[in-house]
Amino acid sequence: MKRILITGAAGFLGSHLCDRFIAENYEVIGMDNLLTGSMDNIAHLMPNQHFSFYHHDVTKFVHVPGELDYILHFASPASPIDYLKMPIQTLKVGSLGTHNLLGLAKAKNARFMIASTSEVYGDPLVHPQPEEYWGNVNPIGPRGVYDEAKRFQEAMTMAYHTYHELETRIVRIFNTYGPRMRVDDGRALPAFFSQAIRGEDITVFGDGSQTRSFCYVSDLVEGIFRLLHADYSLPINIGNPNEITIKQAAEEVLGLVNSSSVLSYLDLPKDDPKVRQPDISKAKNILNWAPKISREEGFRLTYDYFKKVVK
Ligand code: UDP
Image 1 (cartoon, protein in one colour):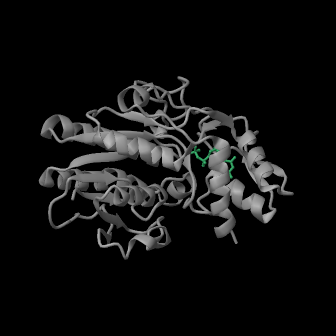
Image 2 (cartoon, rainbow, N blue to C red):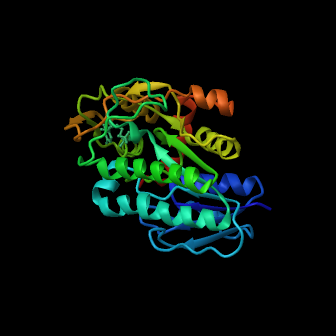
Image 3 (cartoon, protein in one colour):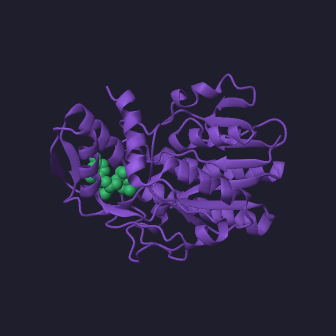
């Protein structure tokens, strides 16, 4: 059995990755400091003899007994309001945490993957964004703590690849959604679903003309699974190129929930990217991957989840 360490295991993406690797017959070690993650996301895995959980902060020295074949570093606050509230932790998990886990990967001769992000492109001046684009990031703006931590994480990972010949993978994740997103994480879709279900105003920031491209979580997990096993160490975009305005996303949620809520327009946060769409040519060619779940289906599955958890 292959052994894999997944950090951020109690988070949205981390928990879905734990599920996938358990289903693929891996021994999974989940690690999380529960800063933004929740044990609810992995409670169903706890009785599984092939799953174990370490409550640990990866910015401190990481010790895992035994062999490891793979390490997936997915721990980090990931929503704009989280990294505004926890700027130092966000910088540390991307930098110190990545360094600790790279050291562990080197010691265990494990293949290492980091969760990078479309945020490395900042407020992009090239559209859609190919991996070759270097980005337009404000290092000292409110999003800088996340963007720069992730950019440093990529640099550190490539350095270990180049100088220590470690096997590494870098996935640049674009907006992803689905069950287990935190109701109050402040991101657009959890906010819109919970507001629509409660009959509250839908908080559209700015005039809602900014765009995002939303990928359903099972598609993302499939892309990550393929990348981990592919022979490719440069960054690769995984996301759904189907781009919509935030206003349209809000209206689609309203229609689906059949809610009496109305749109309420608030100030656009500083440095909020105006457009975002992944160029996924590389993922298509190298991984033979493309998203399969339409927004209609993904929104329905997500609504089923939020119906159960929104109070
Ligand atoms: N947004 C919004 N209302 C909200 C939360 C977010 O209009 O209640 C907007 C936000 O300004 C951004 C987009 O929706 O333009 C996506 O925001 P999110 O926080 O989901 O992720 P981002 O892509 O900005 O990291």
